Image (cartoon, rainbow, N blue to C red; front, side, top):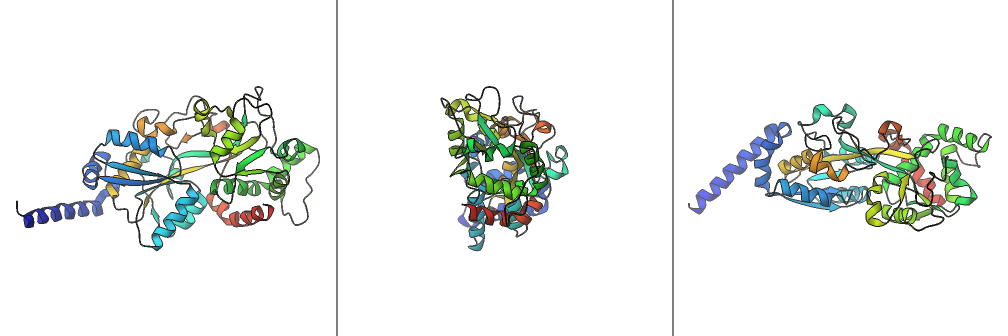
Length: 373
């Protein structure tokens, strides 16, 4: 075949693919996407969890002709990177797997840096709230965790205000909320739930809360008192887990981290356990979002990856969902059964965040945290 014919043939294939994509790619099944994805040959995923490495291995085992390149970066780092790449006219990512919904929805989706996509195969098994405005693959957490080896009878606290007592001075650990958005969302939720925080204070101390001068509500007072009690800020969730969960401690700290990190207890030598019986709540639960990057270079493979991450037809989601089928992660698909070791979702005491409400006051809370630091 002459070079001219090769070029014409290649151009024709490209044109047909482009037409197919423009017409109905969002309605294609995995079987229909596969030949187009194989032609693309690769797909890049920005992921807020290191578990993307396990997804990569499982995806490439099922689809050996497609190279999945996973980048593990926090949601805060992803947001900054996507903004910078958009400003530079670069499209490095195909799929964005991210949390921090208050910023993602307002700064990425509304500004066209990412696009919504719901795989048609699973659409009818997802409640509307998990399909719009973006697809939620699962619910994740930032909750109060303790060392169950040192506290075999249960959590050493039963009220969030316990953390402001002298006995916990310098023994409460969390990631710096100005460095990781999920933890800032946690702080913001304390403020949004100020009425509940005030009621919990009165239940704990037997009298109505008295606010410091300049403090507007019980949530802000709790944050203020938490910092005054020498809250320890660290760089990563793993740092929290090691400090709180390491076995062999006689008087370990307590901290806010991901409930799902209990999955690493055996491998890491931790004894992490969730403090679920804490009033008025042990933290927050929030969506892990999947989206297409705007102008993705590999649109068919991107959609195939998102479909894969939503799990197969089995009751546990199969290989695509296996890294997330752990106690502390909750599938949004109604037909994936809860992990047997997890606190049932309806019994989890964490607050469900409202991204719009969080976004409205988030900066004010960040300003307070900055002052307190």
